[in-house]
Image (cartoon, one colour):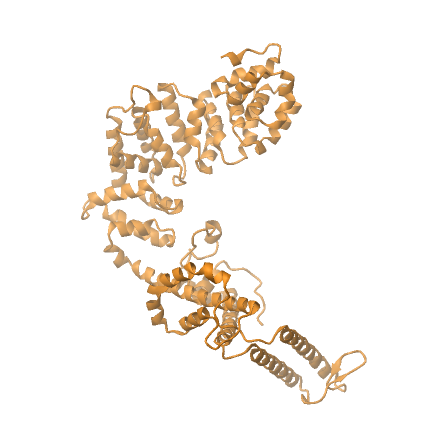
Length: 597
């Protein structure tokens, strides 16, 4: 047995995947992307991997060990398949295994004896001394040291085989499903492809018959072998092994065919629909997606055949976003380099910004995006997800703000476009800027707007919000940042909100306390302890009472609140929260009659 390698190589998994499994197509769905990036799969091609294997001793040892294990498993599977076919009984299989183990033990003893120059009569009888140690030749101490471990190992293996024989000497059952699957395995590779057309129908028939098969014992084979529950479980394990082998073969053939389709010459003749499908296919390797996106974007450039229709198709496809965020992010990373796409987006946004506003007489609450065409809506969504271009210019964000000022309902499109984690940076700043523009022109509910804009946003947005909060110089900007943190999915925001809720800045303290009242109760343990030991933290106590935290009863009970006042506390809006905090500051004697309002 080879010694274990002392070091670790990040490309060992890729070597085993290519030279043992033939699988380097990347991670599947549900796979951890960060762990996959360190595995070496995405960093090499077959030629580079072959050069690495010639130089890396660690990968060579791992590949040799894996091939030996693979050969042993294949040999075991062959014997098991023969046993399944009914031609070999379990007792015969056990006898064969026992004979093979004994022969290997005797051969090993003989080889070691030859190495030390010993003369051993392997046919001699063994003697068991008073200490229970068997020896073949007491006159030779070196021969004693060689034989004893081998014979003890042989006795141990024989005992295990004896226990297996005692457990039962019956033949393995062969069901009709076993025979069918075994026949499928023995067929040539060319017949496997033809069988794939009828596989779905066969699978459906098995699923449809599950309810019957679970209540009745499996059918016996034509040889009339009796069915036993324990042996039936062993048969099911063998069936699963056969199905796994079939599935691996089908996946390998599909991946080989998929790589043929990814040939650059084949992509050059592909339709925009096929290229878009490959560009957003998460199952493909990143380099395959990037190659398809590059060909698609080149076909939309000026001078290409049908470039106008292809450009519109690209904008509509990326705006729809029917793909995983990772695939979308890769596509937008390439799109930022296309000057003709950025020029088209700027022209479209300028045209939208100068058209008549769509705000109805009822105000912003009744506004909708009916004034924008489908193509204009797609352009606004794509521009929002692009953000800054390759040079860092955020001119698109300024045009988006102009569109929102002209069409207030467009902020819904901007918010929805930022929910997938596609835009790397600047999304939170754009939302805060649009929010501020609307607040200066319309009378809006600040807390409701914060919940509308930042609900279901990715974690990256709230990291940006905290950065905006630290750098903001305006009170209104800080208040909006604190209100936005009420929708944060990370409980790390509690410490920041708690620090602002107990600060001397009145407006920021009210906003932070209100955001605390919107968070889950199990996040507010530290806030409850702070409010309990600090009688002057009346704003924090009002927030915990508004949230309905059980610990708030310690400072709401002395208030002697009426039923109407308790209802006000539980349903108070953000505009009423400052007066609610005054209740806990003044106490029961000077409490205002807010319930009457």
